[in-house]
Image 1 (tube, rainbow, N blue to C red):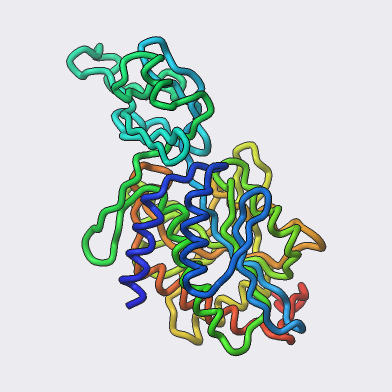
Image 2 (image 1 turned 180 degrees about the horizontal axis):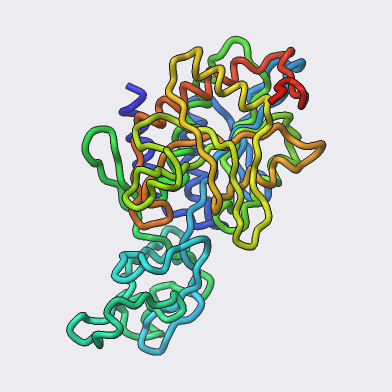
Amino acid sequence: MMLDELGELLTELMLIPGLAGHEDRVRRAIAGRLGNAGLPSSTDRLGNLTVTLEGDAEAPSVMVFAHMDQLGFVVRRIDPDGMIRVSRLGGVPERTLASQAVTVCAGNGNDIDGVIGNMSHHATPPDERHAVLPVLAQAIDTGHGSRQAVENAGIRIGDPVVYKPTAMPLAGNRVAGTCIDDRAGCAALMLLARLLADMVSRPTVHIVFSVQEEFNLRGAEVAARILRPDVAIQIDLMLATDTPGMEGLGSMQLGGGPGISLYSFHGRGTLNGVIPHPAMVRLFETTAETESIPLQRSAQVGVLTDLSYVQLTGDGVAAMDVGFPLRYSHSSLEVCDLSDLVDLIRLLEAAIARIGPGFDLSRDGDRR
């Protein structure tokens, strides 16, 4: 039953546009669902949504979080002929853009579909047929035909643009859709919140749906400053390296179960990443073994999450990135396996239950 509910919830969330900095529709949908389940929430000024489940005051407090936002574009110019020029927001790969369907969010639920234009093959010079145009040279066609018509439709400079929201089932338990990164994490976190609320013995747990991860990775830092957790667990994608051409980058298999990250480092201008706290590594490895949950391991350069900044708040936070394998990250259609998410929820529930008054957050519990 969890598999079916998870699939329905993920589909619902993927179909809601929520560019970084414009997550409010996603936040309201999540808050409404949580409220219906008897889980009241609060929102800080930046837009992070938090549910706090009070628990044993003698145990380390836990913040477990996933980001609501998605990457996309921002309108920067409307040409006289009505073509819309955009700037990237987040790590949008330019080679995926030609002919993509997009949605311009013009405010108050006024979503306007368009297409990123592509030169007709018949008119493209041979030496340009395999070229990738930079995003600044590409344009969105909404069909309006003039700047005035575009503006009359409500589109303005600064409006958010996302890949056209899409969700579709694939074979087995696999699904494809926009912004599985990280609406899948949000869906898993919503179901986890219900399970934790029913748990008899637990630490205080702060469930956070964070903002602006795809923009600057620092939205969750605001929540962490407010909550001052002892432990932070972040839920996000992990690169499925069984994707064609990625075999040499790791051993993360789609459908092979949830994963933990032992090392992440951006390495492209942002000198940050996460080397997890040894107590958290022990916790997840032991829990997975005891509960007979498959556990994969990841170590990647070029990957960064908002946990990188959360871990540095207050006196320092015992941090761990956990996640699910994902194919085709940051593309208009990403692919995940729902069974990985179900096992991830089971793993998180069991691991958090083990964080009690005697949970050791010292650096000397593991002598490796």
